[in-house]
Length: 310
Image 1 (cartoon, helix red, strand yellow):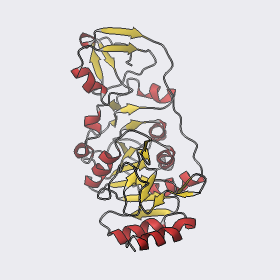
Image 2: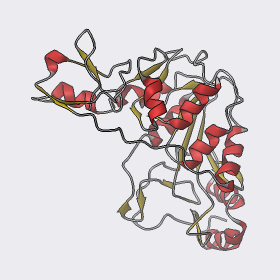
Image 3: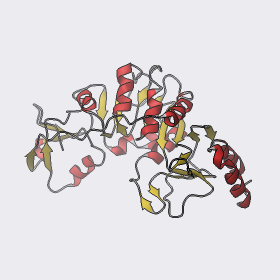
Image 4: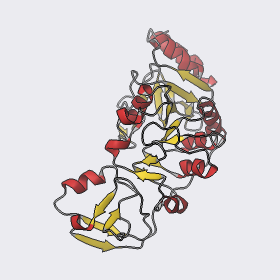
């Protein structure tokens, strides 16, 4: 799906240049669905008419996703993370209610930068509040960078010919070396389950796939490389109406490990922050049990003892 052609013969694949630009380079035939609702964004997301074999015209409304509902659990997690983010930090915000809850509590910050995978309405709210200036970024200062956009019509309108926003392929936005050139890079991503040594399962529920790989590991590693960087993994302490602890002795069998124990840094639930990087298995277990739901801390300690972790 592409924007209408400009006066120089270029279409913009603004909503998802992620791997699409690589596909365009390698394809034998390129067909574009041209839709006037698609914004014309700047960046390495342009396709020239000379590359295109055919066009299909469409005026279908774009898929829209607004801000999720934020409850007290998400709000508490958001406050814990926001307290650790300084003015001038560069942000990567993952998808979901908790990352957006963090964003809602950053509107009073100043000179924030954006180098992210997904551009959504949470980041848009920071731009509109004046919290984002991108002035203190070391890599591509002055620019909000993303590789795909998913939000409201207001977001898509803001992207249109906005010199402060650029959309680039995923091999630029998600390259840990490039993202880490920004000092104080803060990566905020959600997971579904974490075990007592810090392995995160963010892609599957047991063996059942839940999502694609995504950029979580890319940005955790980038934040770890960044001078002053912080990588946050956020999750509610429980699932299924409080009947299941998301902090578990071991991941559910078959779960795909997304972020490894060697990459994990900060883990945040509504009960606090556990800083795991550089810690022993015993220290990790103690820290994670400390931010688990109180109803499950006793059985987590007992399981950790049986595993000889405590």
